[in-house]
Length: 90
Image: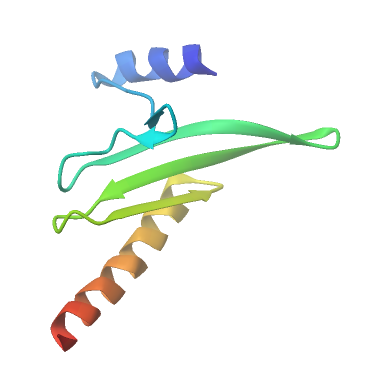
């Protein structure tokens, strides 16, 4: 899978890094998002998932695993709405 990720990144002209190093996220810059796809075999069927990390501009980290990048971003957007709502109440 790593070869697919690296080859796909080269085609798009961007640099992909692993999401974690020794279990610690590499998403450190504010406003940064990273994602990678992985497969998980359940019984005889393999399913593909997207692991997603987003570091908000206030420094808080959002992470999730969903079937697609679009689903991850939709979940992040809901989280952002709640974060803004919490900030306004303070």
